[in-house]
Image: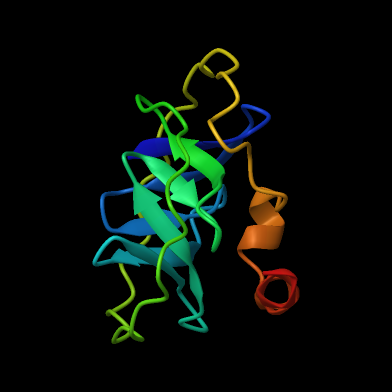
Length: 130
């Protein structure tokens, strides 16, 4: 499992290549065709590009270990996915050593914190700001 770090270099979640698990290893989101959706609500959270988890504006919220956080052009909202079968809870991986503080990505970081990004109410507010 690959650690996911937020802009403050805090371990925020785990990624198994298809699914995102919180620190308690609860399934919180999944990847489908380059886009990330909330596991329970199927709400579109944003895109994943080159190991960066992006908000609706293309600004990074977090990144995968081994990648550098990078922004991208504003992603187009995808079609709704089919809800996948919930994955089995993985074994807890050992705590990784945090990476160094990354450079600020071109275009800056997302205004959303990791936990805000995962919540529907914040996306409704974000859509009104766009």
